[in-house]
Length: 344
Image (cartoon, rainbow, N blue to C red; front, side, top):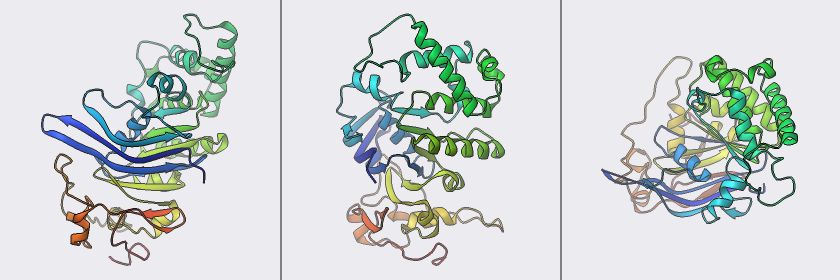
């Protein structure tokens, strides 16, 4: 599959009072056209940092990119002119669905004001003549009408009832699920190639989560949009993703098609993570040990202090990517062969 997004060897540090945290350690990741890729792992493993690094919205001063590439449609976003990335990529070719929609809208303005302000600058009709769009203070009337019609069509697609009336309401007049539908609509309106969804159902109850996931899956497949979907919920990843990448302590451990990932995971961490999901009997299996400090992380594979298969080789250096099957790669010196549960 041709690459749309290719992250290669990405390293990101955060500088704090306690020292320099190596938050991303040589991350490699691919997203193909029309593909939904799940980025899973425990809280603090670096999922959100990776998403923000791709978008170029890491906190200034605290974060620094130490190396690597973020290639989008062939261009390395880390080395592109920031003005070009802001104008042509961020919010247009790549859009974002945040974790908590309640903090993403201003409580002071109507939904229409906020969505149309997005369309004023990021509408696909804003540069019909090609090239960079000239700045303007007033919204051209003809384009405003076309953009508002597109907004109404998209609100219908995300199942917002009476979209014409809904636009005049304030954000607090919508439920949490409806606000997340509005965020999905705003991510789709610029007609992006890639949507980064950062745990977009975490703030919702289980029933609404399922509705949002089905809606998002249907819309992205219908429109041919790729999605990088970050989540700590393996059930959510199983529901929506074509392929899954698992991260641990700032390193990617395994990437595989969803079916192979859940049936025959090869990395010891992936197997432990999946085994920790409660079964029908409600039995809980934890992973012995603790997640390491990113200020002073272990050498080599960062999971080796908690791994049953660790050897001196695992401590000496980070494993190279090993291909097990088409689309299935693992960074492990001792991958486990067999269905999940065979080594329980």
